[in-house]
Length: 217
Image 1 (cartoon, helix red, strand yellow):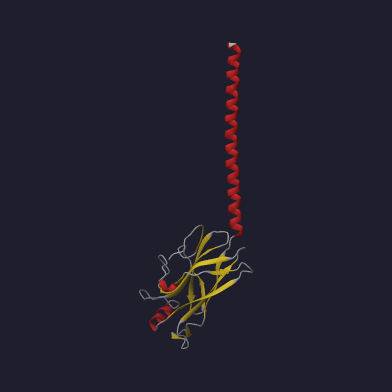
Image 2 (cartoon, rainbow, N blue to C red):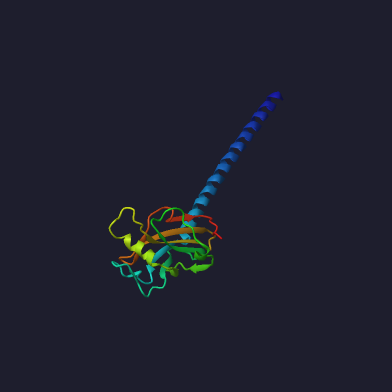
């Protein structure tokens, strides 16, 4: 009797051990399955989400009618800038906050800040069809002193002389029907000779943040 009891205990121990190993393997399989599903969902969201870009940035009229002599365009009451928000993704983008600013600075440095008049917390849908575009506008008054600084920025360097550049930067916070919220930021510098805006360098002013970002109030 004791002999059979001993082997029954051994068999029960082996069965319990096998059950434990099975549970461990099952848990590992569940974790791997969940990780694979998470990766697949992230890849799906990345491929299907909207991808906004700041397209063409263009002044509505030249700043100078006579650049070498620093003559401001007489028909220019305000320096108006038109910029395009383009969607190159696969789903519509719902803009939650649109912020844009025109600044006259020696250099584009520091952290961009937007005043209340430059913030537009409103919803606007940009369709994902052939890079659908939504055109927006921003303006700023330019004085004679501003024009003098801006024109000097493209002339011969004079040590200690103040210069100024027209910088335009825009930040867009948007979401999609998939429930993800992204944010982009782009900066541009105005060239008074060619009357064009060109991209400005600097990671503080050019980025794309993917994830849950709450629009700033």
